[in-house]
Length: 429
Image (tube, rainbow, N blue to C red; front, side, top):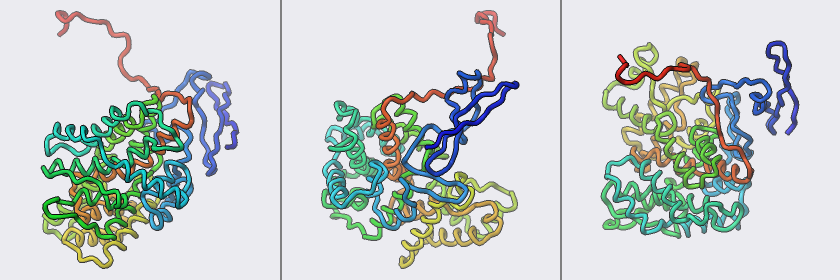
């Protein structure tokens, strides 16, 4: 990186601020010593213009609508790679050789089971509990079962990231089975990653094994690749914040799962399906239904449209749309899928929505596809968690490899009252 300097003038006094340039040519002001030099702090609510640190994991280009994982375009990976291979890329920094991928896949299969004692934890949750609650608790509990291995071997052996990636799909599937009151279905070593998850989810022992259609395996791989990494979103930043304390992997990821609980971070595919169900229930034609958003009668609150992180159409949306149409090309559509096709047609052909960059996004397309895969809405956010896990772990691991790093400690601009005098309770009115 090329280091230059900028000049800041305050009350006639000049201060030099390092100007940092990334490998993509983007520049930033290093204000880490600003307070010591000037006594001033910066204000950036939401941290939309503040970098938490250096990273090699992904690069997002809002102006041109591009997204890269470790330098590889998101479309190339989605259309050509697998979720397991992309996970390896994000976590370890390079695409694996055939042997490395084989070894990695074998580790994921060998470590997909969870300790039998952990099954008792599911009994502590009511059947209708939010799946994220169980997922977060179960991930945290792994700290107890692997307490001697907090500081993983970062480059070889059965490290913690491999162990967690292997077990997360089992925990998610078991959570769903528990909510239905059905027996748990154990993972099968012979099945690939995504097929194994769908097999555990949909197999009912009394009815025999559920056979996962090949197109289901492919589309789930593609969706999870699209969710795998998106720079410093809220949940990834949560991993960095918790990880900066040197918290172990399981605690850091559990915190990220909790961050998904908010409707602004996770659950957006649920909102997209909810809108489609609302349209269907209303009996109103799609074009007429969307008129109320155009005339200001009501606000389009579904998170299945647009993407504020980009100045143009999101790159994940462009790829997701291609995946969506390939998947449904030769399938007979049910009523919700037909409704989704019509919504897409109406929104993308209307100049009002085009000008405002309101378009069906990744959450819209993934919600519909999750529906087709037989995944209930209650599990949609867990699906996002599994997809995002490789990116989260890549950031946690990157932080560990840096070594001695500072604990995250933001400042604030205080706007409350000062120096208030304590009044005894009998004197308060």
